[in-house]
Image (cartoon, rainbow, N blue to C red; front, side, top):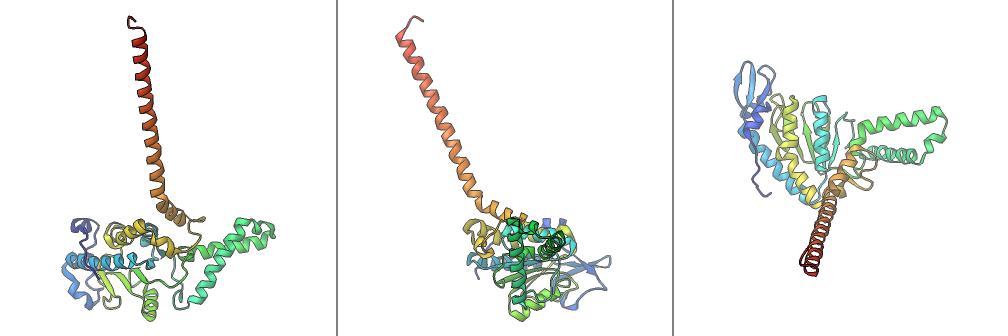
Length: 300
């Protein structure tokens, strides 16, 4: 794994409260090497170690994204849900931000049938087949589609198990972490002072309870930027998400917008160049006409 330089600002991390841990009575002794002090009954995390592990995780994500690997971001608690969705859309990867259904990865065959059910129901809805059914049957199918989209909407284009899973809050997502360990999927975890740093492949000590801290870790710092840079440059994310991306959901439309951004910028640039050329031609034509009139009637 190639080591790179990532711009990690410790002052921004302090302002976001990344260094705040849990109370001194609620902690895991295995987190002792990552704790620098105690203040007012709260453990303070060593941000230097956080930056080091964050840099290692970013290197792993960058190398994996450059090879076209697929990612899954998991964070289901309310404080992390919005940040997880926005970071996943930015990096063009899959996400789960509502509820982790037991066996989502270990029982992948069942998950695949549910994802196919979402695609079938969406296709029927678009073709208007649900409107031809009796109201009761249509209402049942629409409710089922809404439920499936709520819990599986972030992975509905996932065609195989992810290559790397990024988890927010080890305690909250212990089931997801355990499934990854069983399947041998590499994991990157944001852990607080009450977590076990030995469970994940790369554990990043941080505050996993503050919204500002989670947003900074996922969207501003290089953990997700590493994947988004590769996705924007090489478009490997679209291939990993699968066919039909951008059809109907805000996430898909955002991905399509990112993918089409260079094309749109090229069209705008071409239009501006044509406009400038046309204005220059008009100016030259006006000068030629003025000179012709001047020489034709020099006493005017």
